[in-house]
Image 1: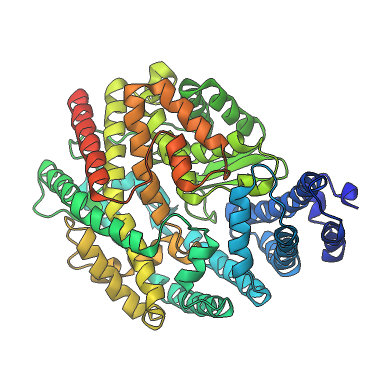
Image 2 (image 1 turned 90 degrees about the vertical axis):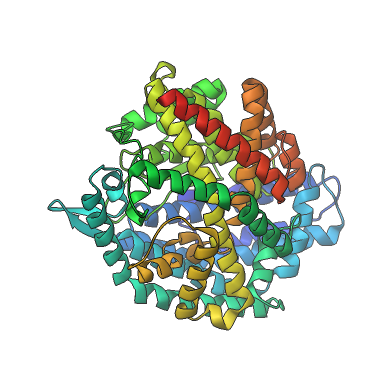
Amino acid sequence: MISDLPKTSQEFMQLPWTSIQSFYDELANRPLSADTVERWLLDWTALHQLWDESYWRLYVAVTVDTTDQEAERRYNAFLDDIYTQAQEADQRLKEVLLASGLRPPGFDMPLRNMQAEARLFRPANLPLLASELKLGNDYERIMGTQTIEWDGVETTLLQLQQVFQEPDRERRERAWRLAAERQLADREAINDLWVQQMDLRRQMAANADLPDFRAFMWQKRLRFDYTPRDCYSFHRAIEEAVVPAASKRYEQRRRRLGVERLRPWDLDVDPYARPPLRPFKTIAELEEKTSAIFHRVDPQLGDYFERMRQGGLLDLDNRKGKATGGYCTDFNAVRLPFIFANSVGVHEDVQTMLHEGGHAFHAFESAALPYYQQRDVSYEFAEVASMGMELLASPYLTSDHGGFYTPQESAQARADNLEDFLLFWPYMAVVDAFQHWAYENHDLGSDPAQCDAKWVELWDRFMPGVDWSGFEQEKATGWQRKPHIHSDPFYYVEYGLALLGAVQVFRNALQDQAAAVASYRKALSLGYTASLPQLFAAAGVRFAFDAATLRQAVGLMLETIERLEAEDR
């Protein structure tokens, strides 16, 4: 009986599949009508949330320590014994609901999504999906164990970020060369994983009767509001509206540094020779000051973050064996988010906290929606939540607001962040265009040498301004070092689309910060009960791909950067 469901995911993890299946069987066989559908959806939600949270808690365990063999064993066992079976059982319930013809209130978007998922679902793909997740974990383990010896100490490559901000150019170059050499040492291992991933992905598309993996992922990612053609338009718009502005910023950096050629190790050092920003010394300080900033943006958001601090829902320090990157996931059974980061004491760590905090607030704001399908938000708008929070929080970075910096340092940090956003669009175009090419041309995309060549072609198209001569192999293998390509395919254009929305949120905040925050929170509370254009509109912005909208955003960003740089000087 559903009433016998465990209360926690920790208890649920101990159940064999036969016990879990009995809950699904009960729901599948229960009479469904207009009078019973809401109770049925609530019971389905309770069951789904338990296995979903079980998966994410096991995933967190293997990312916080990629060397924990017991955690990996439990994660893989769950994938083998529970994950695929639960997905198949969930699909059965989707088909029951669709066959009923019932349309519960607030369920239009979830029904649309279910119809697409039903068309895509094939039992033969379930073990392939589990294998793909395992290969993704293999990739994370490779990346998470990359270290070098620096100043006599074993150092993760992320910890070198501080070195790349030092004024000593020779020291920066030496660190960069050592890191690049270490990354290239894993080149063949990553190539081997890539070939396996491409084979799996081709088979998944074929099993679903689709022409290629891009078509498979378009449906899997529920992209109803734009097409691959729109992505190509977005790439061209970036090339037209952003690349020239980015090239000028690179040239300004070269002149300010007084170097003949801008090299890869010159991109993080301050061009005005100011000391690097060192916003915090301990993780406790990072948490405390981030909390103060969120309270200034909105007291309720600050309270949300405090719940995470008190509830052990943060893992923020960088250490050997920890997976790279940062993420926020939801523990759906308790309806609480979890933030994972790799903080080493640089300003990028502050931006990561603001970014992932935005994701966490999305989970909090939409938690009141009764059904899990309503809270499974679109990635494109999820990234508006995160990038929008980076910009909404930016006025409160100063110590007089409880933040990290003096007014001059804050101006520096804000200008640098806006420049990073500006420079991100061309990089995003490289990553997205690479994936379109790889899956449109699957045989070529399965050949690592062809991937190297395509990456260089796209890099030269979108990323002029930095001289990579003498480091052709390091440049060509850049695709190996973008985790999304390997572990989360076709999840990257969302950042570019969302950034355009976030800059519009920022524009609104410059006119009325309180109103912009209120609209932002209202849009987050909708979860996935509205279409993508409707969610953007609720936040007071427009969902767009065109050069004209990009040009307006770039103009605002450059104007703000120049103002902040004047304040800093």
